[in-house]
Image (cartoon, rainbow, N blue to C red; front, side, top):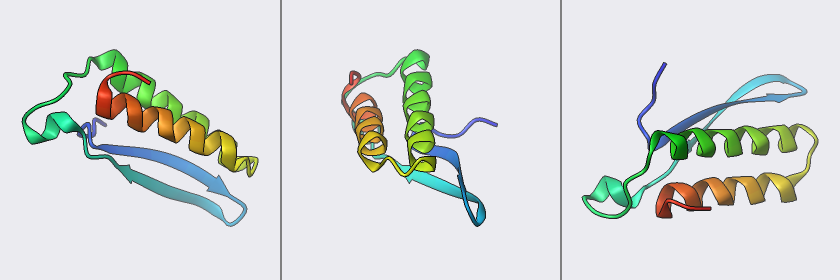
Length: 80
């Protein structure tokens, strides 16, 4: 399944069972200007979101925030 670039879907597993978390990101390119992202950039952003999800499973909010911040930066600027 392919999602638009502004919609990242990640599966978060909590004690109560699976919870789907959606992160909607406004990318400069969506407003008719800004950075052109390559497929590798999208893949890297998704990987960073997976790392954040893994950190949340261990209640490591610092690492989760760092990885989500890197993903947002990558999507907004084209680099972490």
